Length: 100
Image (cartoon, rainbow, N blue to C red; front, top):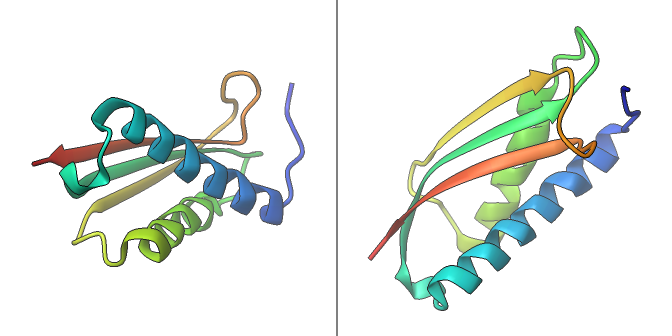
């Protein structure tokens, strides 16, 4: 079952994913000073065929990370559009982090 999400809602979903990733990091490592760098973010956006704006949705995530942490030191950022995501989510992002 497709879900209808406006670009603005996808932007907010990206920001919420940032907060969830940070909460998970905080729970696991207790101290953000242990983050040496962000290696890669892989983002998936639920989209209708031919929508083609998944890079924009995922780049909003990257922009928010820059707001919070400054330059993420040349981390990789990949984006794909998918016909569905679980639960039904509009954005899912995987983060790979290097710890000190």
